[in-house]
Amino acid sequence: MQLLINDHPVDFTIEKESTVKDVMSSVHHWAQERSLIFSGAIVDGVLYQPDSAPEMPIHEINNINCYVQSVGDVVIDSIKEGIAYCNRAEEYLKGKDSLSQLTDDEFVQLQYGIEWIISVLQSVLHMLGMEREDVRFKDMTVHQFIDSIKSFQHMIADDKSRSDINQINELFHDVTTLFRVLLCSDALKNLIIQSVDSPDVLFKTLLDLKTLVPQQVDNLEAIAGLYQKGKDNEALEIIHTLVDFLYLYMRTCYQVSPVFGIHLADIVLNNQSLEELNIRLQDMLSEIVEIMENNDIVSLSDILEYELKPLIGELDNYIDVMLQQIKS
Image (cartoon, rainbow, N blue to C red):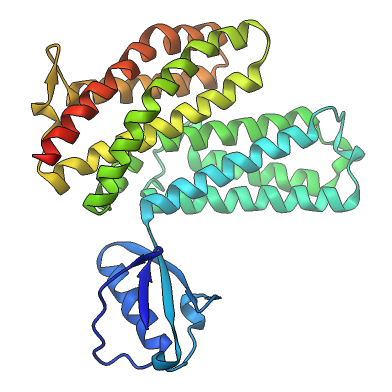
């Protein structure tokens, strides 16, 4: 029997494990010790959840592929799924004057979607440790914001004919904004630090990031032109891609120090350390989210083209230094 973790073969010494359930239980325990989430396993092509592991003897099995994720990855995936749903919902409702134009089935699906959004928000906030009453969004606490969504859900359930379609669109817009705020939060950054990738994965990620830098620079140059042509959705897609790139870059940098013993403050180019550059990027990312929340297209175009683009353009040189230090 071969054991794999996330599609990668691993050395596994049989001790007291005699069944697939025993092996999955051992992997589950191993994951918990490392603050990882064991989501399930594919046993000879069949998917099993952790709580439904079969009692099959391992000598009858060819391979068990177990899938684990860090809590940080689960949060990121949940946020991305939430944003994707809000975007789809907004697109679907575009052109409709009221909810009364929805069929009964469509209306039920919308209610389920709002309920799911509430569940995702609550789960993400819990995993980030941001359930405190003082955590704020817009002019209220996040708890009050979630309560407002619940109230709105009850209102449209009572009478969809008097529901304002603009309120629905505003709700999905606000939820998307909150998800993006959480994506750039210090709480998520700290959560990511707690889960470290293997050295080979980090090295490959740095190589991939280096090849992506020129593309990000080109994209930033294109955004202003897209906004000027009224192609806001295309510009927004580029910004989403940029945020994904910066998330991956920041996550990788946070892990370089504990894995390779490289201190970002010691990597200095043009009188600026990588640590200082990353702080500027993080601050700018927070500013971008705030500007997007205010829908200030002019300010957004300016900060992306004239402030963020030069910083992104410097990243490949810093990544080169990190790669050289790792090789040495």
